[in-house]
Length: 342
Image (cartoon, rainbow, N blue to C red; front, side, top):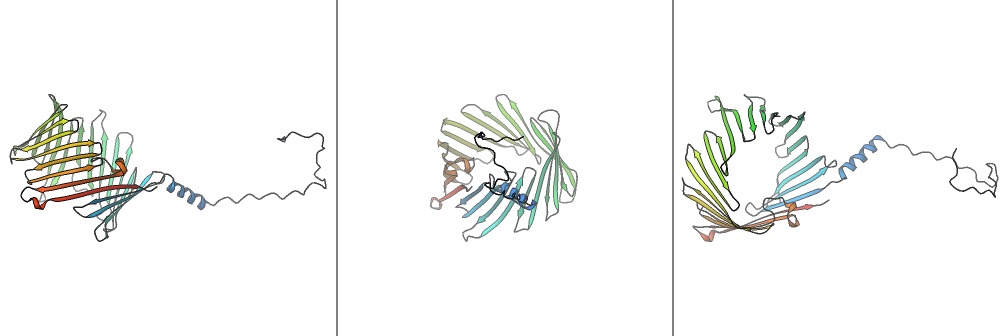
C-alpha cells in the first residue's frame, strides 16, 4: 500500500470522492507515441557524426613550385573513421589533383576523381600470429594479397605476398632480429623469369654497428662508430669498390658539424647546424658536386608535425648561392600551417 509523503492532518476528516467541493477528476493523459525507427537511427547517426568530431585544415606553400597544398580532415563516428580531402591550388586558383580518402582500422578507400578510380585496402588478423592485408585497384582490376606470420621465437616472422591475378611465385620475406632476406621472381625483357634476392644484415662489431645491404648484385657495407660527441661512418660498395666516409662532430650542446667525402669521385659536402631552441634551427652548408652553397632557417620542429609546433606552424627560409654565378642566388620559402576548426 502506498502512503502519502506528507504528514496527515488528523484535525480534518478525509475528503470524499463524492464531495461537491472537490473538483471533477481530469481525464488521464495519453502517453506520447513512440519515436519511429527512422528517427531513432537518424538521431544516433547525427550524434556519432558530431560527437568529438574535429575538422583540421592544413595548408602548405612552397615558393619553388608556387602552389598551395591543401588538406582537410575530419573524424567520423566517434573517431571510428577519418575523412581526408587533399588538393593543390595553383597561382590561377585552380583546384588540381583532388584526392579523397576514408580510413578506418580495418578498411581504407582512396578515390581519385580525375582518374575516376578507387584503391581499396583492408587488413585483419586471424588469431594472434597471422596478419592479412589486401589491396585492390578498381580501374586496373589488379591487387595484392599479403600474409605475415609471427614465428614462435620473438622477432622472427615470414611474409608472403602475391599480385592478383597471380603471374608467378609469391614474394617471400624472412625477418629476424638482425635483419631480413627477401626472395622474389623477376621478369626480364626476353620474358624469362629468374629468382632474385635482397637483404640486410645488422650486428654489433667492437664498439660500433655494422650493416650489410645486398640488392641487384651490389653489396654495400657500412660501419658506424659513435661515442658521446663524435660519429665516424665508413662505407664501401662491392664490386664497384666505391668508398666513402662520413664524419660528424658535436662541438657544443647546440652546435654540430657534419662532413661527407666520396673517394671515387672526390665529391664532398659539409653542413653546420646550430640549434637556438627546440623550434629554431640554423643550417649552412656546401656541396662540391653541385658547386652550391646554402643556408636555411627553420622555425618549428623540422622533423615533427605542425600540430606540435608553436601556433601550429612551421616556416623555412633557404638561400642558395651558386659558386659559378653569385648573381643567380635564390631565396626559397616554405610554410605549413594547421587550423583546428572544431
